[in-house]
View (cartoon, helix red, strand yellow):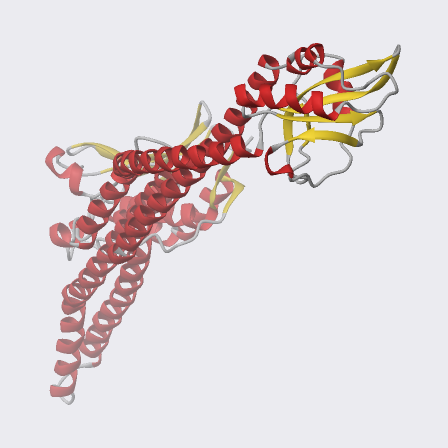
Length: 491
């Protein structure tokens, strides 16, 4: 993953560098093109406005037509040549009304057009103040700036004086100078722009990849075993989303590892507990079976029945112990699904008490069930709550002296239903109360005094935890012990 992130980082560097370089080239080229176009337009408009009256001035010096309407070639050439000697950028043409070139004075006398469009001339004469470009007789593919004036003869318009303000010679010199200027501008601009882009690119890339470096460092720490490493999220965007995803993934991995460790711990505990808890009943069974086999001919019928009764009791205890162990293990691993439904707690108590009629009569106990409202409904897993009440009643019977009383009460408290099981007896010392819900507490303290496995209260605790409830206990030595818990009422 780190190698991939490094590739991403390097790729990002080059992509950003390429983008910056492309932007610099694009902006630089655009700038040069716009500058060149604007400069040319600026020069053309300035030249046209400055020389707008050149054609009028020339027309005042010479009359292009004689009285018969013929072109006065000699006089026209003399005046025009004098004008061009002063300003060699001018090219002068005499046109008729349709734009046909009647006469011209230009260097080398190279003219490629016979007609010049009159629309730009009309637009120029109207003097709207805008730049107007007309035909260049020596370069048909190019428009040029000009000055023009209508020629009147005997009160009628005879044609136009059309003066190109940027001659071919001027254009050649201008292009040479402009190309040199453009080369200098481009070289300097691109050199400094590329240098600035490189410096800015380094700064921008450093800023953009700063969070990426933090991500790489955190991922490396996580890979090296620091499962608590998390990426601090201080911004928004794609990298923040990546950081959030990694943190969520790391939390999930850590949670899964902890769950695996917990399951493995439970597995080891289960193996240790099975070997610990099964040893005693198996030893009892093995010992009495061995005694029966060894003394098969010498044991009386009464002794054999006694030994077989002990073997049967130990087998039942072993069976219950194994069942409780597996049930508790699944509860602690949270592998038991809940099937919650509303049910009447009073009916459940009646069913549980009927199962203990024989045990109650054997110990001459008084069993009392009190329910403030027999129609009270709770919302829980009925089978699991039945298991809770059975374990608590079983625990009360096992620890109640002969002729004592056991009381089961159900009371409504706000939106909760409280169930309590109380019994008279020796009680539980205060220092032992925090530990009575640990597995094997009873087995270690009281084994042999009753038929319990020592796992009942641990099962009760885990079942109620699945219901987001807590089992609580209060006890007074040589008087009573009360276990109680709450369940949500169903209305």
